Each structure stands twice: as C-alpha cells, then as structure tokens.
Image 1 (cartoon, rainbow, N blue to C red):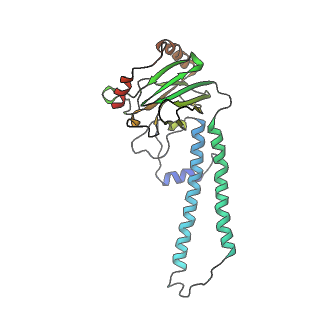
Image 2 (image 1 turned 180 degrees about the vertical axis):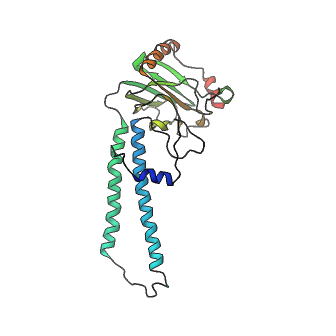
Image 3 (image 1 turned 135 degrees about the vertical axis):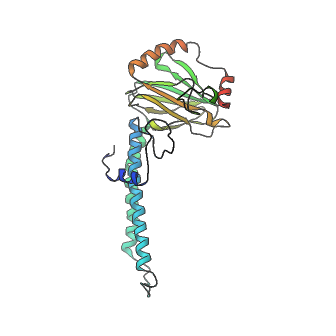
Length: 276
C-alpha cells in the first residue's frame, strides 16, 4: 500500500530513540510499536512512519522560520520595522501547503481504513464476546464450540507467564489464514485490542462488529480490553497463540472434546480471576 523505502524514517526513529521489542508483548522501557505480525499492522507501521517524516519536516521548517525571524527581524538587526500588512503570495502559500499536506495524509489514511475493515474472502470465522470481566470465544466453523478466557491471577502464574496478560485458555489460531473476527458484548462496551496484530475494535451490546486478521508468524500475542468497562477493566486480557495449520487442526479435535458441553466456567471463577 505504501512504499516501504522511506529512507528518512529509520533515521528519525534512531534519533528519537525509538526501539522495538523483540516479541509480541510489552517490553521494559519499550517505545514505539510491537513488531508487526499481520499485514494490517505492517501498513499501520508504514503509515506511522510517513506521518513521523511529515511531522519532523513541518517542525523543522517552523523552527527554521522562527530562528530566521528572531535573527533577521530583531530590534538590533532591523531598527526600522516593515509596515507591510498584506502579502498575497505568502497568504496563498500558507493556505495551499496545509491543504496539500492533508491530501497527502488523507489518501493513504482512507486506503488503510478500508484495508483494515474486513477481508473479502475469509477462510474461517471466530466470535469474541466481552463480559464483565472476561472474554468468551466461539468457533462456528469448527464445530461451534465455545470457551471462556479468564485472567490468570498473580498467585497462579507460572514461570514465563505475564502478569495481567496471561489467560487460562488461549485463543488458538492458524497462521497464514484470513480470519474474520466478529465481536460483541453482553453487558457494556468493551474493546478487543492486540497491538502486534493491528486490531483494536469496540464490542457493543446488541451489535456485532467485524474485523479481520492474518497472522504471519507463529507465537503468542497479547492484548487487553482497551475500553473503560467497569471496576475490573484492567483484568480481562487477551492471549492469542498462533500455530501452524496442522497444529491448529489437532487443537480443534481436542477442543471439541474439552469444550463439548458449553465451555462456560462458573461466574465465581471469573470474579476470582478478576480480583487477582
């Protein structure tokens, strides 16, 4: 969508001290995005880099003009000030240039919005439902089984698991697959957000929103509810495990048996995890 050969972007990122984490999870002292693991996130990163270049150029020009004005038109250098009150060329310039900049930003922006909205030919569908305060997931294309994913409380974390981000059941998805994601809520507005995949969308009671994702590498990708949905808002993480298509097929066989009944957990368990 965008040319990825923006030469200045890496230089600006280096100058600003932006570093990228080596895994699809938050890192200590991290600045900038997590490494992209989907086409949408790559396009978001490219668009961010374009905006970064534009912003730095604008700031540099404005700073240069300010310095020029302070040096050229201070009282010592210019004891007799100009009484000019109107300059047609300058007024046309400062009107036309911002319009041009906005057009440069708007064209790729609208392309990106349409690109990230939905996929035309999804290979599978999952449904995510927000609850106070946990997520449940449906796999309608693979036997229509359902399970809940609750945060692992602090006293149950195993070595290597992330506090406030690990769930007792992970969303398992195949790589290199166009996946349609349907999202809703059964109580208040939540938000399903996974930074490395470029997904951030509200779940609204009584309404089904749609997005899509294509995971390009295997691994675990973490996210959180990004809407202020209540007292335990900070305790409903998202953990997605991306595996090969063969491994996903094996997982589906086991999941159909494990979640054969309803896949639901007692509400008291959800409350216990949220309190952790």
